[in-house]
Length: 391
Image 1 (spheres, helix red, strand yellow):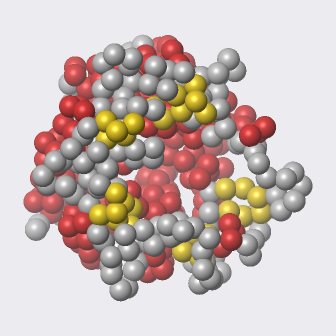
Image 2 (cartoon, helix red, strand yellow):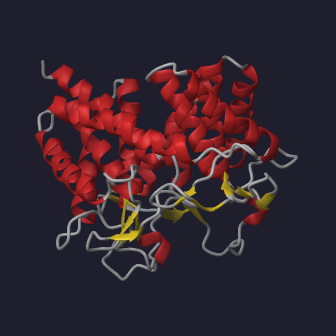
């Protein structure tokens, strides 16, 4: 296929295959919010509601309304979830729970700061889409709460023993690098620039281990390498997602050196994470080649491959590096062959190492209306940019 044909495929799959799946099957018209535990055909198999996925769906439809087309039904779907979240999603201190019953009763305490991250994303985009300042104010309040917790994200819910092997995780600075730009229109410019600088340094200078050319999931609080299960853990999907976040920052700031560095790191991650026997990218690997402690280490996950494709597309769009395009085509072929469900819509999420469907679900506790439609939108948008660059 040529570039234009790829772009048409990504856009049509988003609008005709993936979005209709969620529009038709996920809305809880009785209690509000969305059902995300959907089987292959879209039938609900569990009714619990997970804040990550509720917020991500609000964000997705708001973002498409803002950036693709101001369709009233998209705004209505976003507000359908937002009303449920505002009524049920937070404790008295404004911390976002992890999960709720279908009626909105809290199930799991607000131990996970990423609920707050996705809430801030959701309400920032919805505020822009609706013009309702209450949504934007909630996004800003939640973001400031995240910054206040970033040194100790789990707080009283942290199960580690205090003082022994103090460590910090990659996920928060990674998500902050994207989140802050999602909220740029509601934050002071100085706070935006400060957060971008913090996140970029953490991602590119602390969790990126120059001696290995790879990004690890955990380091000591002083930034040093930890020769432990956690310290050696590499999640290729996280690293590649972070690299396209960094590319977006590089483009925003006119920082060509940052973009070039992200591409080099992306190639290292792909070379390290690619399964030479069966194809696809491993979920986890040990930095030093030891057996990882994650029993699902050799699974092939939908979002890992989608983020890899975006990293390569954005790398090619920004630099014209032909190796990015070669990797894109390789990743595209594997991903579309193994994850896309042409019969019932949406994509499978979990394959075994051999590339066979492991779980036939389309949504669950961790998979919702987010990665696949975001990937298709970003892929379509970036392919259009590449096509324009080449003309």
